[in-house]
Amino acid sequence: MRKNLPVVVLVGVDNAWGLEVGCWRKQVAMDSPETEAHWGKGVRFDTIAKGFGAEGVYVNNENDIAPAVEAAIASGKVTVIHVPIDPVANAMDAPNYEEFKSWYTDFKPGYGADAADVAY
Image (cartoon, rainbow, N blue to C red; front, side):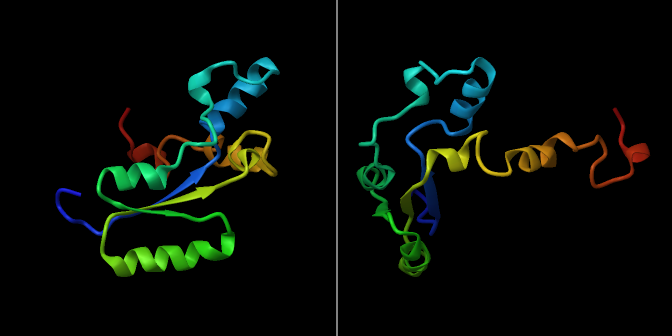
C-alpha cells in the first residue's frame, strides 16, 4: 500500500488453517479442538483488505476468478480476492494426497545440483 505496488492476492479460504487441520485429524483421529485452527464463516479477507485501503473482491464462482484477477491487474491497485474453497481440497484427506506428499518426501539433499557439489 505504502509503495503503491499493483499487487494482486488471491486467497483460497477454507475457514481453517487447512493443512494443519488435516494433519491434526490424521495424527489423533479427531477434529482439532483448537479454536485458532478454525475460523468462523464470517471472516472475509476482501473486507479486511478494504479496511486497510486496498481493493477487496469476493468471488464464489470459479468462472468469475479469471475476470476478477484480470480486473484487479487492470486496476493497478492492491487487490485481495477472497475465494471460498472446499476444506478437503486443502487437507491431508484430499484426493491424491499421497502423490502430493511424495513431491516433498522424495526431496533429496542437493536437489537441483549434484549431491557431491553441496557442502553440509
